[in-house]
Length: 291
Image (tube, rainbow, N blue to C red; front, side):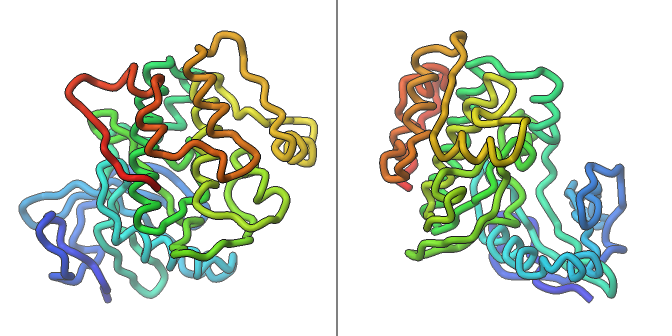
């Protein structure tokens, strides 16, 4: 019944046992997606691990023709190990469903926090972007481009630390440039809007959009009159930053939201940017390599 499930200890690299639904006590639902639900679960065997179990219906996956996307999500996420990337411990399936065994993010979806508060303070925004840049740098070092960075795909751990989740649109792209249109409209960079080749620098652009949205409460190129109007604003980099945003934050946003992907600030330089360093907790340092 089960396949490719790994043990939950850090030392274990190889699959050690097969999992199935009876191995878990099912708790409260954590969320609902297009292809199923996510539940908080606990392993019945000691030591009791708390996990998030994502249940996907095979029929809906096939009907929507996203088998490749789901397979990609599993293949990529299962091999990632970073404090700001949501762990996928393993997966199993039965006749009708696929189950993903995910790290439980104790404080839930970041998007709900953003909706509740309207926007975040510069301090809180800076700390999230610090963690994001660190995680993206790690992903890019593994030749993984996320391609769908947005508040809805970010979770918060029990200590409030940020976790990147949802790798459905990500791609393992060692050296090749891609031309697929994917991701969320408000976060798409000019090269994807215009149907040009793109590389890992699409994630740098999305980081700039995220920085803006955290502090302003909506994406910078959003135009509610029409989709095409949003496309045009992105293509022109029609960027208007409100006056209340500090000069340091403004500088980082401008450096990330460059039309030319190669002119976008490197992630290693984001981690050294004055606005990031200013709010970083004392005693923590980021030495992540270039992405």
